[in-house]
Length: 179
Ligand code: APR
Image (cartoon, rainbow, N blue to C red):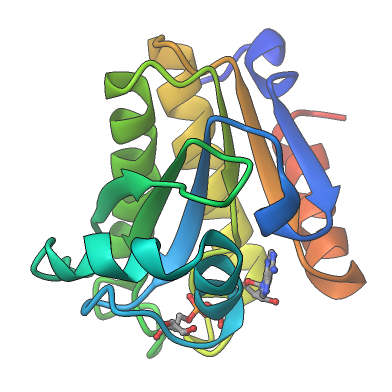
């Protein structure tokens, strides 16, 4: 599916901290228990406060490749969408489809809740070991396709933590957007 240039202009990359983003929804890189962890999961729970974990406890976990929505509590964001990315094995055990499923489900949840802006962490790109460029291609393509399909979301940010990840996402975005 060829993505129109106007769609790519709705996607921005930020080198920063997702807990500080002033958007309607931020997308967490969680695990299937949804009971918190390290990395960006830990940062989001610390910033949101204990009510976030309390709500997560009511959700009964989440399957890999999917996502569930909670309120944002003390975060600037109104919602947190907890996506459960795949642990990378070799790319031939369903990882690409599951990673795409995280981004697609997150966009669907954001649109269902009337969000106009969303910020994504780089799901599975930390301890889950996904090769960054491969993950970036899946992430950017999945979100662009959802933006092209229409909905309330008008701005999709990828909030990347540090130059190496930011640089790789930028290179893939430039290639996909035909820059
Ligand atoms: N803002 C934005 N991105 C961040 C932040 C932050 N404050 N902190 C970390 N990151 C980045 C990491 O640098 C990495 O690029 O988020 C990306 C995802 O890395 P992880 O947090 O390790 O997530 P993931 O690889 O999906 O592993 C998920 O880790 O924290 C546990 O509970 C979580 O078990 C789950 C696993």
